[in-house]
Amino acid sequence: MQKSILVTAVAALITFSGTAHAEDSGQRESAQPDLVVAISVDQFSADLFSEYRSSFTGGLARLAQGVVFPSGYQSHAATETCPGHATIMTGVHSGRAGIIANNWIDLSIEREDKTVYCAEDERIDGSSFGDITAAAQGDYIASVWHLLVPTLGDRLKKVSPDSRNVAVSGKDRAALMMGGHDVDEIYWWKGKGFSTLQGRKTLPAIAALNKSIASTIDKARPAFAVPAHCAARNARIAHGEGKSVGDYAFQRPEGAASVYRGSPDFDKSVLDAATVLIKELELGQGDATDILSVGLSATDYIGHGFGTEGLEMCIQMSELDRSLGQFFDLLDGADIDYVVMLTADHGGLDLPERMSLQGVATAQRVDPDLNAKTIGRKVAEVLGLPADQPVLYADGPFGDYYVSTELSADMRKKVKDSAVALIAAHTQVEMVLEHDEIAAIEVPRSAPEEWTLPQRARASFHPDRSGDFVVLLKKAVTPIATTARGYVATHGSPWDYDRRVPILFWREGIRHFEQPLSVMTVDIAPTLGALVGVDIPAEENDGQCLDIDGGPLNSCE
Image (cartoon, rainbow, N blue to C red; front, side, top):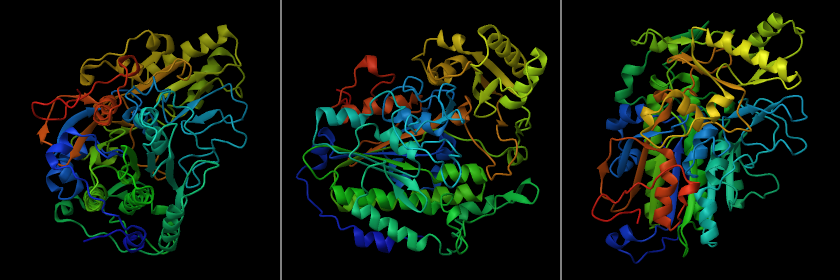
């Protein structure tokens, strides 16, 4: 059995008190849980859950015997990490939360790079966007200030000041968006260990864990064993000159710490940190309910680097299942009355080179000329503007586009109209929606699979942060023109392969049932809120409480 490379070190750090609870399982069903564990598995689509469900034997198998909503939806169009995490513990759509994308453009800020990262505070001197996806993760000041609404943990602490609200993740944006504004402790991976907010001290137990990680992360590790059900996926798929995916089992050479995030070991480290926090803070062992938000990011890095349908993802699903099982076993050993919710921030799409071999004739990479810089130059030429004057800004080929505010109002309209016409005519573009057009749409409360594309875009929209227009690409168009930087596949579309995620609940003694009809991630916060005694007012909530009792009682009442 593959164990965490840190298992010995973490075992030395963790000795649960084993405090017993008097409640029997019948009493526990109706009492508030001592601990809520909210888990987001980055890029864990409903398709992956369905595809691998029969192979699960560990933590995911346990959750699959709880309350299962296989058709959960991140109902918005901007299916990226930050918007998705912003819905899970707030109960509101990402646009209402102010998180329209991972990155957006703010032409009013003074720094040269106008791109804003969702989890930074660009108002602070010294924060600069840089390259958030690079190993250095940018030179920015991590902050939750862009999140405009409270999380469930924020609300719980207002009604129960003794409750602890704690978050840990592989990505800062996951921890910040799930934890919220009032967190007792918050950590995310940076470099070779876990970091926290500027000005905060790192807990000694987390510092000790970081030291253990640093002593092992550069050491070589053998390849993971290939489970029998993964063998058929061991097939090399070329995606560029001399590059391929589909046959890698995550062996790590000496000194290759840079590949750690894109391996199953990464999730194990995050769960080790979560376990340390439970022990150090005695979460779930006090008189008040505590919340622990956990963001597991390896599935996303593996999906980006290797795609979703190869050997790499198959091994990751097996190891994720195993790691979660070990984590739940530790909680069981501490005799903590806990409830688990597991979902995802978005789904994902496999790389087009493999999809084209598997019956998706339309799978393709985006045209490298479909970008704000190239389109802007064409527009400037048509309108007689200087060639070196930027007129159009965007963070990628899809999503929000912004027209330069250096232009006159009349010229801004001409630039917008010209750009919209050029982009809408492109064969890879499904739809272009203008700012005022989106703003006039009412966000529906109907079944999310029935929403129109404009309605999906509206759920991601914020009037002060969204672009002058939004570009939606056609199905199976991967918005990565070249794999030279190491990403072969991605997400972010308004299509259901990126929107659909599982939503799972588990607690000791819970009645198992499966509800195949669609629900939304904005339903999670009110559902958990009902369990812990937090009522989210209807006017502050885009979701609804889901009755997860499975019997004559109603968990929402």
